[in-house]
Structures are given as C-alpha cells and as structure tokens.
Image 1 (tube, rainbow, N blue to C red):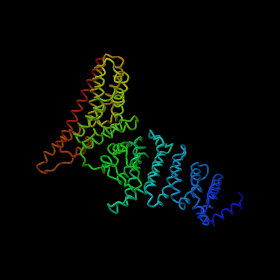
Image 2: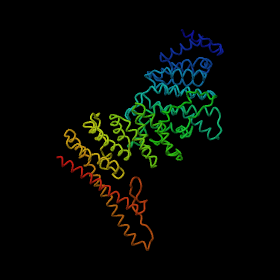
Image 3: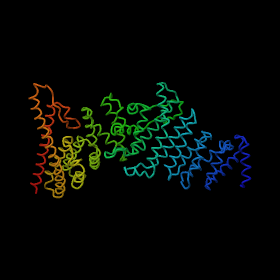
Length: 560
C-alpha cells in the first residue's frame, strides 16, 4: 500500500467510531502492524501506537498484535525494547477481557522450545490485565494459573544440584517468576485478614484459587524435586526457595493441620471455582507432610497439640502414597518421611513407627531390601535407624544362608557392595561415637558375625577383611580421641568435686564448669552427679567398642 493511501486509511479510522470499524479494517490494521514487526520497524509502530490521535484505533484493534509482538520478543533476534513498549501500551488501554483471552491463548500455544521465556514474559503482562478485571479477577486468575502451571509442568525437573544451578530449560526461573506473579494476590488476602475475620465471596474465592495454585505446585514440580538443604551451603537452592514460599502462602490461606488432617478448603458456588479445583490430590498433601516433618519448613508454626499417634496415622497415608509410585523422587520422600517418624523424641510414637518400619521391610523382596538398605543409610542421619538397617542386613544374610535357592542379593559380591556403603563412619575420624553408638555397635556385631560365618569361604573373605580392617583403623582413631577427651573431663570433674567439698562449708556455692556437649546437651547444665554418670557411661561404651574391635582382629588373625 502506498504511503498516501495508508495515510488516507488511518485518517478514516480516526474519524470512525470504534464500534463502526469493520472486520476488513481489523484485518488491514493487523497486516500493517505485523509487517512493521517482521521488517524490524517496531520503533515506527511504537510511534503510531502511542500517538494521542490514534488511541481510539489502538483501543479498538491493537490487542490483535499481542501474539505477534510476544513471539518477536521471545525470538530475541532484535532488540526487544520497542516491542516491549508497544506491548505495555496495549496492556494499558485495550479491553481487559480481550487481552486476557489473547494472553491465555498464547500460553496454550507456547513453542515447546521456548516455554520458559514465553511464560515468564506473559506473566509480566497478565498481572496488570488481571488488576483491571474487577469482580471477574478471581476466576480469571484461576484460569491463568492453571494455564501457566500446565505449561510449566512440561519442563523437566532438575535431578541434581548442578542441573538446578544451570537451569538450562528454565524451570527454576519459571518457579521464581510464579512467586512474583502471585504475590500481589497473596498481599490482598493478608490485607483482608488485617481488617477482620469477616469474609466475602470474593475473598473466599481468592483464597481457593491461591490454595489450588499451592497444592498443584506441591504435586509438581516439588514432589519430584531434590529439596534437601546442603550442609556446606549458606544459600537455598531455587526449588527449595520455591517450596519455602509455597509453604508461606499456605500459612496465609489456611492452617496447615486442616490441610494435612482434615478436608481441603471449599470454594463457594458463586466464586467461579470449579469442582475440579476443590479436589486436592493426596499426593499434594503428602509433599506438604514431607516439607513440614522432614525438611522442617514452617515447622516452627505447626501446633504441638496433636496426639503423636494421630500424626503417625495421618502420615502413614502419605507414606503409602509416596512409596506406591515407581518414581525415585517420590520413593525417597516416602522413605525419609517414614524414618522421621522413627526419629521421634516421643517414645511410644517412635516404637509404633519402628514396628511399621520393620513390617514394611519384611514386605520387600531381596532386591528391594538391598536397594532400600543402601538408600536409607545414605539419606537418614539417625544412628538408631542405621542400627535397625544393619541388624536387618545381618538377618537377611542369615536367612539367605538357610535357603536352598537364594536370590543372591545378600551373598558374595552383592553383599560386599552393600557393606561398602553401610559399614562406615560418616564423618571419618571426627565421628561422634557416643551419638552414633547404636550404629557403631551394630556395625561391629555385623562384621564379627560375617567374619565367623565366612571364614571358610575364600571368595568373600579377602574383601570382607578389607572392609573390616578399614573400618577398624578409622574407629581406633576415633576411640583414642574420644577416650582421651572423656577421661580428661572425668578427672577434671572429680578434681572439682574434691575442691568443692573442701570449700562447701564456707561458700555454699558451686564452681562453674566448662560446658561440654553430649548428644546436643551441655554437660555444664547438668548436676555434677549427672555429669559423672554420663562420663562413666561414655568410657564404658568405648571400652565395649574396643573389646569388639579386639575380637574382630583376633578372628582375622586366626584365619590367616
């Protein structure tokens, strides 16, 4: 089209009422705009779009350019500055309902090779559109979040910390952008709460939409993600940050016990929320239980009034769900959640969980037991759980030896590979032997049993001796350091008791003692009698360990 003809068309559009513009006008406008974009004339398009005389034209027909503009920005072939400015202007003046429909369509039509870039760009522009929708904002927000999460679910979840840091496909960036996207709506809920307990249908609907978003996030990607905090890092990973923020949003929306133990939040019929939104999968609540009880995210605000038995019963449902899947990330979360129930300060709950734990082990076949034992020893930090696993290894070896046709998982090479992963001192010479007493004693008993049992089998004897000698070498260093330390402390305590006995009649005071940690408790906070008992028990324990070490060395020497 010639320049003078284009000027005539534009002049006609300016003088025509918006409602009188025809389909041919819309088509011509879009063709002209798309041509400008394709030829790199986005600066010229921006001038036209922002010119005051053209606002009626832009308001009526401009939204149709959004899709082309978004694709141009995502392609990154040219400087996106002018296209971004055009999009921002269109978002401000075009019809909000039309804009939302177009933006949601763009989400659904996202190029599989550019999911992250497209989604992050669209979120920046959907948010201001939603703010213009008034009463229809809540259902529109629900539609937008469902569409966004549906696309994000197509991105693979990083399997390792390295993959998470590289974030090649952009899942972590999308999760961070999602949090930014929902924050204004979370703040809106907080503002409503600050005004008082009364709620309207709009507020209930907003809570429900945000709850659905959080529960879907728990199911994916968080259920598949590696969420453990790294001991040597001061910063959380992006996905752990995402998990922490999701838990924070849930705390604003609804008490965690209600989500875990009772019925999920229901939306009112007039809130625009579908029945599908009201049903929160058990998998989502299982991930919530994992984050709360294993990763301790938001544990500081979880009420302590619930019966331990009740908590165990509820968690067993989630443990069952997690262990029923073949996905490694699900199974690992289920296993750790199960071991946390065992690693519990409340004795009767710990005993009940231990019974369930043993019943679960007995349901596994040889291969599953082998993998399970290896996995638990790597993921659990509890010496009591380690001792249970080591005892089960001994039982499985004994059971296999009595079978005519064993599956071989606890014999020869497979047994040696398992022992290399399980019979060890986690922190080497720095291992706290008193805290890890259960694991150490069970490891020594297992080695003694195997050395006696296998002394006539040359095929396994050499490897078994190497494992035992390596373990004992490190253990002797630990024992030497620990016995020296505790012996010194015991002598100091006894000397202080003698001094206090002499001074008691005059001062009636107690001399302060240097604090020492035993299983996370300071000795300085105990009475002298309690300190003496702890120190004596520690030394007896080390003597018992040393006697087992000597016996193992004798068995090896006898065989040689």
